[in-house]
Length: 86
Image 1 (cartoon, one colour):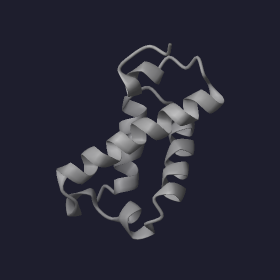
Image 2: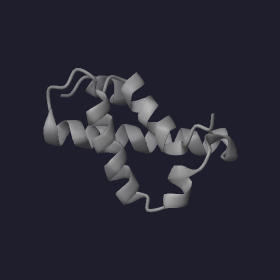
Image 3: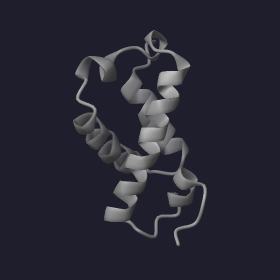
Image 4: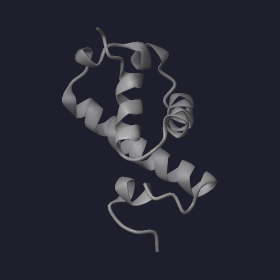
C-alpha cells in the first residue's frame, strides 16, 4: 500500500495530539501554502527523509497557527512547540 506525503503529514499531526478533523484543517491550509498537488499525492518513498523533516517543521508551525486561531488552550500546542504558551 502506498502512503502519500499528505497521509504522512496528517499522521504526524494526529500522533502529536490533534484530532483527525483538526489535522484535516491544518493539512488543508498547508496544501494552500505549499501549492504542489503532485507532491501531496506522491508516495512518501519518493522523497528523502530530509524533506519530510522540513515538512514536519512546517506542520508544527501550521498546527500552532491553527491552534492559536481556533483552540488557544489546546493541550497539544506544547507538543508542536516544545514549551508552554507564555
